[in-house]
Length: 452
Image (cartoon, rainbow, N blue to C red; front, side):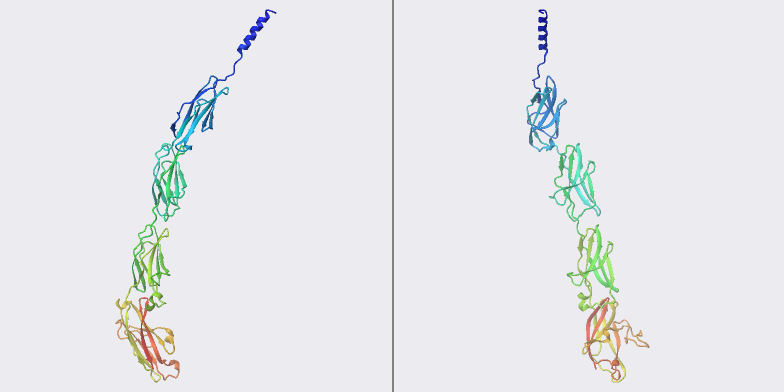
């Protein structure tokens, strides 16, 4: 028994001496990559130096007391993207290191200042905004940044309005964009925004718009004149590269308070228009402005709908003059006979007799307040009596053909006819003589006569 007691004591001593004590020693830790007060930009790597006799289990990274990462493997570091923060902003960075016994140590915090003002992509400017009849092209400078990500083409209706992205290009070599739906009559503002792989973007400062399309060149009417059986209008051919059409308007007033379209054409090479006079209508010179298309203007329209108006023009001419040779009084025969009374009118025209189409007159019975011959013209002829007007051998009674003297023998029926309808009516008459000048019936001449 005495021999066993010492052995028992020895074993107890050995047992108590082998038991491990708990780890209460925290790790050491410090931020080794940066120093307090340093300015940083883009993405930086925050590196931590930490040691512990039992090993490190994890390191927590904090930005402004917010946990942003827990790293469980060495090397302990955090990739901090500073582009998410405002320039010149200051931020507190710290870490907490934990050993395998969950002992922890908080590092000495450091203050870092963020400034990405020099990290933004190169500012690119629009170099041109041009357009053709079918498309508008926007061109810009090419990026030289090594971390290029994409271009964005921005559009706005004005320099100060909100910008909308209309296209994105990830190919650095593409430096133009084409639009087919556009209006060159208004401002179309463009900018290019370039973005790098860090997400930083730059927009060209000034922007650029298209030059507004100009209206067509003011058209010019050269002349308007009678020719043949109509009226001709000459003008200077349009030189606009966006020409659409011509139109000719005519009005009864120089102010064009109301007007009608006489002619339209989309043929740019046109520079003349001729239209025939209405042979079924007599246009009277005494009421010229109200009865014929007296005032004309040419309108040139471009493909964008813009119009330019020419000068207002009208036909310039001298009225022909007429000398009437007719008696003031005619006495009807007293029997059943017909007397022929020669009536003549001599025409004087500065443009020559070839412009005179015909001469005639209508007869107004004053007492009866009615037109004789159903209001139809009694025509005079400058034919030298070479033409038989009524069979068997009735001619005009004109002496010389082509001398400008127009004549006709008026039948006067005697009072001896028992049927009053065969008698020429007595009374006061006004004869309205008309000269057909080109397509203009000029009724400026009258002759008063008494038939007894």
